[in-house]
Image (cartoon, rainbow, N blue to C red; front, side, top):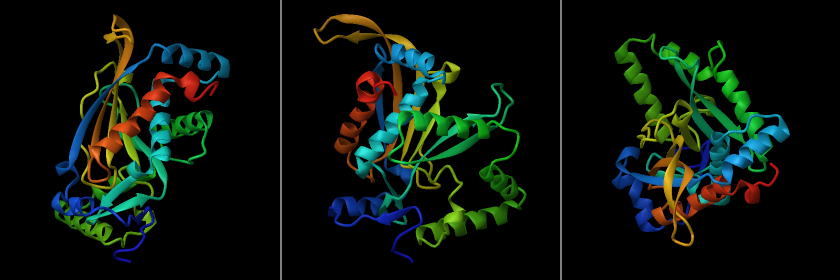
Length: 278
């Protein structure tokens, strides 16, 4: 149906005229991108992660916590859990994260992307089990469904591939794509994350993709010491981590997004309060 529900979303009604026009004035996702930087204080976080790892016997990382923080943010702030397609704004049906995974930790190892479907009711422990299983499958020798599709697509002549992609884009805009066409594609997800801290790098800002429906890209940087102004105004040195967000502002306004990201900050900086024993 051209203007009805999609397998991955339902149209949002009652939008303000400005919000309704924004996807038409800025039809490409990267023409509507806003960048945001968040520095997190890990003073309470790192001891909590170490204690949980020892207590549970399951390795628990900062990246786990950031991902879970994004999930809870999307659940608690549903206007952020939307996307734009074909000039309309949709409420996303499924809660899904995507992220890049190296097959092996060496320069020549191929890079793939995995997709993780979650439930709003998942606990932190549930999330870790699901996320670790998906990463393990991504690092396996067997090709993932999305990898098989890409390998097959690259066998086509370039002009044929361009035509196929153009047809899929148009069918997607008209809501004519079946669920099977997007179910395995990581770029049809709630958010995309990259953990550059795992290889010791600072977090850069990343572009959004004009393919798919991902409206937010989060890059996690390395853990590092940084100057921090305490509550009493004193200057300290604390363990910190930088997050950098690229965000499609057509989905919701900047104030709503900024307030939403404070949920993520609370979960990462104070997991003992937000999650407890996990």
